[in-house]
Amino acid sequence: MNGNEKRILTILKHRGASTRKEISAACGISWAAVVKLVNRLESQGMIRCMGESARKTENGKTSLMYDIAEFQPLAIGIDIEYGHTTVTAQNLRQALHYSETRGTPKNPKPEDVIAFLEEEIKKCRKALSKRRLTVEGIGIGIPGMLIPSDQSLFERIAGALSRSCSLPVVADNNTRAYTLYLQKQFGTGGSFAAFIIRKGIGVGITLEGKLFRGYSGQAGELGHLPVDPSGPVCRCGKRGCVEAFFNQRELARSWAGLSGKSFPLTPQEEEERRLTEELFSQAGKDNPEAAALLKQKAAYLVPAVAGLLLSYDIKNIVINGHFGPDGEALIAILTESLSRTLAPRFRYSLSYRPIEDEGFAAGAAMLFQNKYYDYSILEAGEA
Image (tube, rainbow, N blue to C red; front, side, top):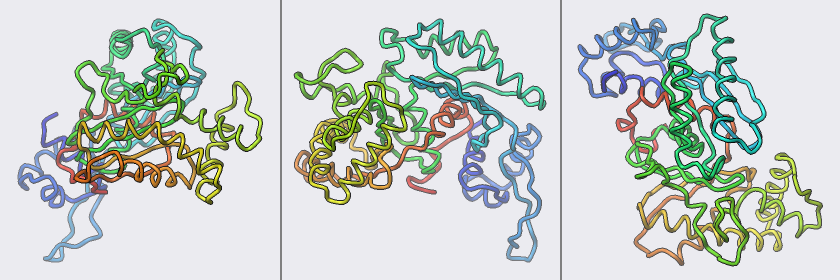
């Protein structure tokens, strides 16, 4: 697929059905070239003609509208979490054509993960084949700490599944997968960073529309920045990392203790979210105990956010979590703390966005589907 074809698919994905004239203007491609490329993409089943536009041209005529096809190319998107795994099949607009959730193997070895995924992929492809649908590739989002001792886990899983499934496979950190999903939601070709706060903290970074992975694929592991050597042991084995102090479970546990509520050793995800949302709600209502607790915990997050800003000077940073409608309370605390930490010349935008759970599987599919796009043609912040 050439660059101009990627530009056309990108514009259609973010703007919806468009005429060839609109595509030409948005992509900066000549009318004659757009006609040829649209015909080619249509013959390949990548886009389809939607009929005549309701909008008339200056001379009173109507033009044909084109949009991304419903069934081609499909990608399998797999989101692996510590407790469960979601397997989906999605088109370029992330419309679902298959979705199943299974329990993730406990304390797995790489071969356990590979065998598990092989079986789930087989089930997905079998279900799709009954509808005469096929997939072009597979994207997999994996927690960085799923198997901490395996530094080449992504490559090993992708290679093994590619051989067994005879399909291209891309595996990466599930934080980066979700960052791709946010990039789609924002429709941005610029630079931004996303802090994903759940059981831990992951940071996804895009620079000029490109996902940044770093030299060895370890970029964005700011949750494992040590901030207090006397703190609790982190999942990475170090003591006092940022995410050991600021994560969904720790916020829920601390609030439960402060408000006199019970907190089981192995709480359910729903209970953690409920307590976390309650903490933010009370902080938003100026409950002094809740506000003080949130400020205390947020202080551990400040070095990670400041370090990112100092390193990359990224304008837009989005904090994502299951904090409920009052999650903005965290932004006010961070902004005030950062004003004392950073030099006055730094200009940035800090915002909160609730996590959309379906975005992890959608982003996983996009790890493979990204080959069809060119985000650099989009303006930063364009919807």
